[in-house]
Image 1 (tube, rainbow, N blue to C red):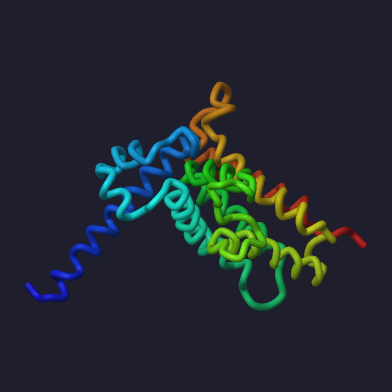
Image 2 (cartoon, rainbow, N blue to C red):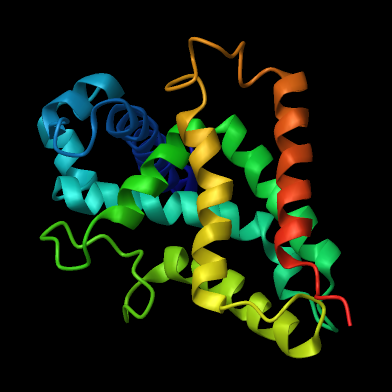
Length: 220
């Protein structure tokens, strides 16, 4: 066996272990909350002992931030249309909003964690890197920043109404994240399967209608 293959094997195994850890932690945090999960429980769910787990993440907060970064990286590709060159169009916002909702409908645990991260105070000892203005916010801050930048450009060019960008961005993010995060939970007694195709199509139609109504430019 070549030296390159020998040296690459541990890295590949390490990446597989890291992926298992992130997947297990995402599900556990989403189900039990950050405080309700121990590193030992995460290791057990990932099939790793504590020593192996701590080789990848030195603390629960570091692991949580890694989940946040991984989720944000995935969503950055979904919101790429907001960064396209040329004049912004309302259709870009509508299509991107629907795409984000569809993505989070496939990964509701991610939606639940995003709510948790966004509502954790910036002063928290956990130090989650999602707060806009943080110097080391990484992908999560870039994700939020893309919405802000698009809204600013679109308002300036007149393709949306003259929104208060901060309030509009918060309301838009809440619209996209809250429903996937709570689907199958607080409406479980009256709804069917919120993740089956027909339900997801209905959700997309409602998101599209909300976004159009909320951001359409005022009639002159």
